Image (cartoon, rainbow, N blue to C red; front, side):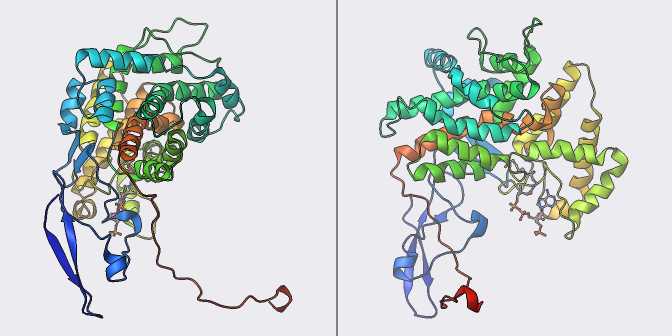
Length: 429
Ligand code: CMC
């Protein structure tokens, strides 16, 4: 933290105030405005939090102008190439890369928490078969506090860590159970002989009548995608988790709220929306028409998977996913016309003045759906894949908040409604 300050003067009263500048280890300097209401009598107005830092965090760093993303200081490119999802989960939770024995213990711990209470399957079976899986996920994860209320003293670090591990471990089991419910398949259980992503794929696709061998290509690429989606500092769903957590609500309820926030098409729901959009465009010859629609202020259509609040450069995750999409299609010996369509869309958009001046580039959701589709994941489950991975970020950020005294999150407003008026009796209206 620096000693710098910015002095502001209220031209109406002539009063001045020194606002301290908070500097982190990296990133833009930030003004602390806490004293503003009590000294000058002003609140600040920032809809969508485009200029507001809501917390101090040591977990993830993004430089949107340069296209940089780091978890606990480690560049995403290095983690994507060299690490595994559970190693990254350990890193995000604890702040450091694990030693071999720490990693082995952590993997063992996660593996032994993957089963869910049998009654959860009864709960899931109550949903209509064609319920959206994100709706089921939000409901089922929210209900976990009703199943696992044995260790819910959130002032106890051990209880907190147990809740965090339980969620990381159980999310793939719940996700697969939601899918199997939709398919009408019997429940599948996690297998401790398999690793995190292998066990997830096994629960997703194995059926009692056939021998199922988990594809190593699929397991590897899922591990990569989970690493890339694991955290992204104070995005909408993470901020939701922190806000709900700030009320003292339990972590299962907080993460269920995060799942709901993630579902929106401006956030994680964009991966599903990209596939729907590519299908709607249908052919390379129609790309130009859709680019024009995206640029038209009177048309609600937006190029899904394009643009980002923080990145004003190529999203580093998108570059890695684009390369992985090629490799997966090649390894599977298949092609997908949607890949050609996506490439053409990207090429034209990146040459277009509108996208150049507004600094709109492909984001993490632009190519991920092509991989999910190639590996047999149905479109309605795409955002669930995001949720499984982001659970690590949500619980890491929630743990960090719990470890720091944090006031309840409670924004103010600019009231623009009616001023005081007298009640009018019904018969006189
Ligand atoms: N297509 C066309 N125009 C766009 C797009 C787009 N995808 N994204 C932004 N713009 C325009 C927007 O209309 C605005 O124009 P103007 O300045 O003339 O009003 C300008 O670019 C700035 O956009 P904004 O909406 O003010 O920016 P934002 O930071 O509030 O929104 C965003 C960011 C991600 C919600 C937005 O870019 C968007 O809706 N993208 C499509 C949905 C999407 O891909 N979401 C996934 C985001 S990354 C993963 C994640 O967060 O989960």
